[in-house]
Amino acid sequence: MLANIDALLLARAQFGFTVAFHIVFPVFSIGLASYLMVLEGLWLATGRQVFIDLFRYWIKIFAIGFAMGVVSGLVMSYQFGTNWSVYADKTGPVLGPLMAYEVLSAFFLEAGFLGVMLFGMTKVGPRLHFLATLMVAIGTFFSAFWILSVNSWMQTPQGYATNPAGQFVPVDWWAIVFNPSFPYRLVHMVLAAYLTTALVVGAVGAWHLLRERTNEGARMMFSMAMWMLAVVAPLQILAGDAHGLNTLEHQPTKVMAMEGHFESHPDGAPLILFGLPDQEAGMVRYAVEVPKLSSLILKHGLNEPLKGLDSVPRENWPPVPVVFWSFRVMVSLGMLMLLLGGFSLLARYKGRLYEWAALHRFALAMGPAGFVAVVAGWITTEVGRQPFTVYGLLRTAESASPLQAPAVAASLTAFVLIYFAVFGMGILYILHLMAKSPHRGEHGIEPGAPIRTAGITPAPSVDPDRHLQPAE
Amino acid sequence: MGTTSTPKQPAPLWRHLIWFASLWAGSVLTLGVVAGILRAWLKAG
Image (cartoon, rainbow over all chains, first blue to last red):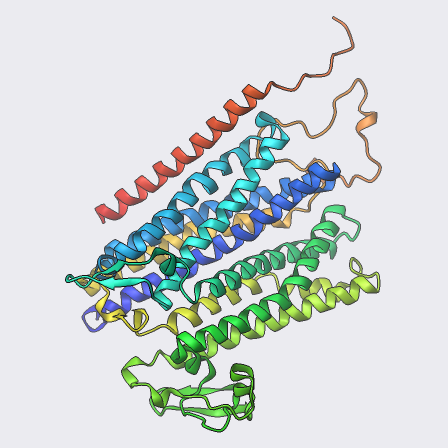
């Protein structure tokens, strides 16, 4: 049976599977590192116990998510050598140094200072500890910076020349790093990381508020998450629109697939809301569309012409149905995030942020929405770049190693089994930690750290507002 | 043995800095070992 399966398709499936698994962890790490930095900074500035309690609550979850992100990322990068050696050989002179910078950021900023962050609170003092938290947050940002620069160069390559061996070689590093789609992708992705984390934090807060409305930690995390959502969701929609216009300029075929525009529209293109794209027939069946709205959004004029896929050779078409639907999943979830942010503002205005159960249920249901939106957005941009690995220059079919289908199928099976087992357990443990309610005197990771004063009598340490947990 | 105790003095800065550097180096080393093991595993495969 394996003889009939394309080794290239299996290699793509393997990379797609490992990246889809990997991408959710760094997105969560980027957002959570910044959230931890804010919590610790607020604790240092105000001395309020709730901030350090929340810091200790979330740092355990951060540590597990970070570890899974690092391991899944390392495996993924090695695939360039195993399955994509032609791509690695041709793009290595340009992309190798950028990926090396990402690795340096991950090793020396993120991972290095993570140890201080996890185990150093009682050993290095609060200010040096905050410095470590700051370095981890900056490290996650720099990792994202370099890896998105690499990805963006694959989408909008510039600043290179080709040598006689057919390799891309650097000519202008500034142009390579800051290629045309990079600033838009960086902003869109970092905002997505903040939104995703806010949705998770909000969902955890909502889960505990549904059980115990007076829980101080749950109230604080829910309030902070809803502020983030209310502010960042509209900004993300604006950033996404700007990114889309940039894509139209540099990768018009991708936008044609996103919009489902098989035909050119010289007098204004409709916005197809839903439909069933038929790649073979070159049409969208059962289309529900708004006349001329696509031209208005993309060209800011009702009658502006928009080219369709009929202006592109068929061998350069991406898989339209995948791009069309993944884009709609991402946009729909973005709109729901905007709705949740608006709902939270209304609840805050009415003074019912912690009492409105419908809001809490909505926030709880939206907990995984950021991860789904990120994966959907990633599928949109990566499948939309097909059939190229380096847009317009290097075809995916010409990028793979000389592979045998059975070998790739075996390693893909191993990846699927190991990933679901290892990361499945990790995710279950994270959910187990999230299910525990935050409480005063939260334990950190460090063993033996005192959580309350031990005087001659325990009376001074008794807090009437404290919510004792059964486990204590 | 008295019943009162003097408040614990914070550790000197040099001790904090040594812990800071040690934890940082230990973490980098740990990740290096994990990366090396994964690389060896994938190369063997």
